[in-house]
Length: 180
Image 1: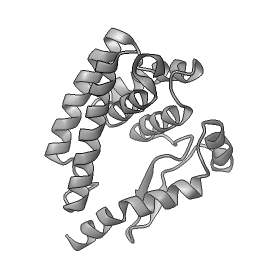
Image 2: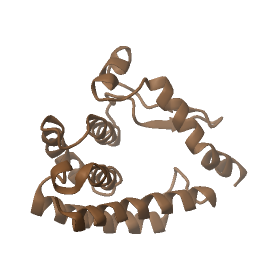
Image 3: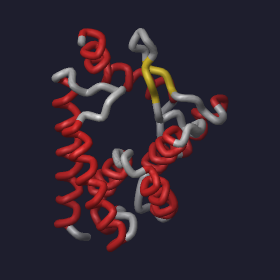
Image 4: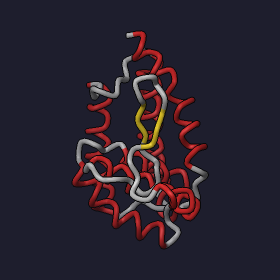
């Protein structure tokens, strides 16, 4: 295991989450625009994760540990400025999940993110938006009747619980959006 690489990925994750929370708390995180500070951070992180993947392949558990693998996923998941890279990372993550190097939910989130960014229905219901009243709802799904079974297969809870969690987590951002 590479502790140095693990620490680097964890630091990237911490920076990402700290900035997201800071911008959300300040009412500066708006869904209709990419905040310049967040864009800068994501550009920097995606450039680095590309180098890591080119050198090591998908940074899984055996290379960076459980938490490092989750951090690598987050960096790729937030690489929305490079959709082609995100889509190219999907097969690597699929292999990592199949070999026990990454968790299924990571694949579910990345697959749904790439599908919704391409204007296609998602599979697992991980991607949400908010209506005009600030109520969270999942973006269109390929097969809503099977979504909870598919989520369970990936180690995830029911869609209704996820939607409630998203509603609660992003309520401050929605309130700030409405107040601003």
